[in-house]
Length: 302
Image (tube, rainbow, N blue to C red; front, side, top):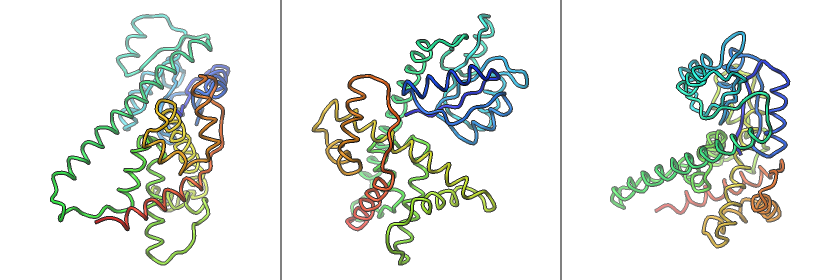
């Protein structure tokens, strides 16, 4: 599921876009901003998959905001929103790096069509990236003599499992890797039992943020990113199951990491091409199973 930030000085447009995205199951809106300056800060904080941004805003227009975000290293996709029909201005927006253009006044059908194309592009780009990474790792392993291969640590093993599920490109995958690495180190140090989720989220926040930050706030942000990533894993596996119920990835991961009823309902949603409902997922079960599988793979390394 894609995450979105909406940057538009028109409050009505912001609300309409958020309603369409969330009610029609297009994705999740993780932030709203009323201007370019505020929008830039929001996007850098939330790192969404897609930014919906107004062309004309009083403080800083959409094209300038995109340029500044690119300078700061943001690599997500942009969709421009505007009532401007000037071809030269629209051309400048495409040169700045937008993927598509949505006209005002907001039209539900157009928004769904455009964001559907953006979603498909993102999915394909993620899969291609993961395939390339898998091939590169395989080449590295094959080039090393068996006796000289290094044992993989928890981070490497978790990364490969997430890649197998098709979610290594999700923003929460980094948090999951940090948490599982912390868990592995804690276990080696004599820690017993599986900790509370809050403890795990704050462990990831602590590893990513400098000392002195609001740990509780950052922990909640980690929770949101992880939840979106686990939902993306459920969607990916359900899609695989619809295509090939006997696919090895579906047979291994779907029943192990998720409740059967959740997988079945997600498969039905995808098959019927209806609105994607906001569904709760058992994050603790997902992380516990991932931890157990990671520890098992570490023990069984040659």
